[in-house]
Image (cartoon, rainbow over all chains, first blue to last red; front, top):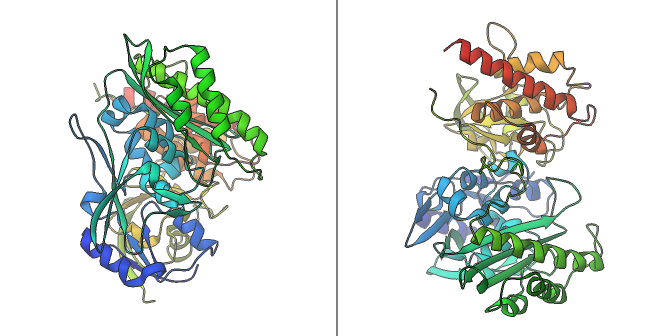
Length: 316
Length: 163
């Protein structure tokens, strides 16, 4: 790895000017699980690395019933799944936080970094999209917000301009009778990049028998995470039943634009979109109805362990 | 680039070192400080052989810059055994023959310690999931999982006996 200057500013303003000064030759370091690998493989060279973990507003994880959830750009996946508010209210986000890498990666990797890395297969991005997350960005010209659904512009490309920095992700408070679910297909159980991922969010009405709001987003089937708007539209106002879900899954399949690569041929990926969309929808519906749906790391036999590792009760 | 002065605590002892910004924590642990228990396997976060605990969080030391260790507390495999002998995890790895070539072992031991620190009574499912980020090409994992479950039981009994 070529040497670079390391700086760890304490304020957002300082971080922005440190970044802006070097343009393309500076990058943000949050968890480093993508950046350090990219630097080591010489995908690019940098003059300056700006560690954002010491800036209070980027390190903030907070929830309020009116303002919703705020995930600072430097908050790690493991902080998310060790936070009782996030675990209880946003199980769909926990689905993602608990499958990005293994425990070692989750202790460092951030949702902010997953988004800014803008990989089409980013496991956090589709979940954030279906939860209607908004990215708060700060730069030399001030602050602006961009819906996460519009953040990625191509593989590894985003709306971030030189000198701009992702500050936080803002997610609305959970609505009554709502639920989210994200899942992916990989050939192993853990530690792999999604061949296809699917996220779904639903709000139910009519005594939880009909779809009121539906959002579906797909990973690894287009140059950016893909919003399957037409598939979601099909369900709105419709009764919750297998037929409706199958029709939405078919529409998502039709919307996918996968490529063939080492992870899987396009036909297989299209097939997976149908399967995973239906499962994500069913999981989201079950959660909206208050049922337990295990994520990838939960023991399906042990619904009492809602987070990957429970902290021991106070010693008795 | 000029070197940066870093103050940290490793296995309970105050430790200072000088490093270049590009150096990983793993590189400094092994090459500057002599903690060669942490191994370099893949150097890109896939194998877990370099696992250490940093401020209570299990991390791959190859994906941490050494400068980021400023002000943190780090536990490496060298910090597991006490004056009275091996850590129960180490003892059980021996008894269950949970290693063959041994290069992954320090990473597994540190990862297992991080798990038991948080959850003294994990299910087999939880142990297996926790170890997803540690690769072993010899054992097939089964003996490792058994050793950890056994060590967890011993540690629970010890802590119950200690009141």
